[in-house]
Length: 180
Figure 1: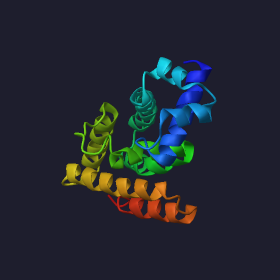
Figure 2: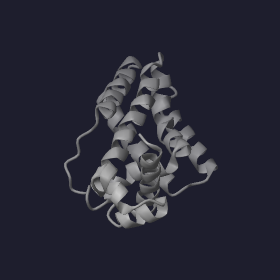
Figure 3: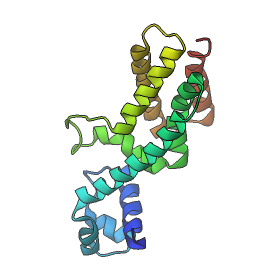
């Protein structure tokens, strides 16, 4: 990827995260990036092409995070790593993950049938296995509950809560699995 392409993607990401995909025109992306709108179209075809490139990066980055969790050996360590994942994602690349988590509310993506990524399915499988190894009677339901909790935490993280709130919430969620 060229330097200009990276600049365009970074700018699009920032603007999509701040303003939403639907309300961010390519002309604004071009102006903010200091490039011509034609260059955006040459490299990415259109605004959807920009989003597709950002989503491809998302898949790659999430794959790295999932592989780090998969390599853990202790079931409880895997569960804790999943619990910490949203906080890690937002602290490392806030705009990037804010956009990813907010897409479900954006007009173009709202109402589309949801197809979980391979990385997401792998993570669900790993965590289901971890709950099973810890002796939970209904590991699939535990995973579903944990996903709901983490989705709520992710929504809170988009609002930039205090570190104290984040840490107390993480501790509370982890405490639910401490005495497994």
